[in-house]
Image (cartoon, rainbow, N blue to C red):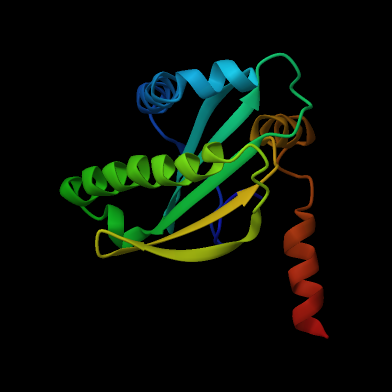
Length: 164
């Protein structure tokens, strides 16, 4: 499960043009770093009833199994309640991705992953983020291969914890 909220299921993909546009922007902005580390940016997003999720991965160009740096960004539904808020949230997501990757790429030995969702304030709005080594492309492919009927292990573990 890549969403922040456990209730976020059956999301719709963000428009492909927007994902590609942001990928292109990041790859151009960080062109020197992409070349230096032989990596590229890939963007994936989903719109759920409860949240808007954006995932930005800095992936190895030649070895898909080399651990990426992946930023997950999420916001609550009220931040996408009208067209103006959606545009502001998109702008904030772009700025937040830039801020995070500026920090990550400024240090060769950066290793400050935050695998749990954390709150961050930006432009008077509340967003949530986590930083991991997850290759979301592999996660999505595994989910596709396993199908919708495959039990969500995280949800089962949460249910077990609540029962005890």
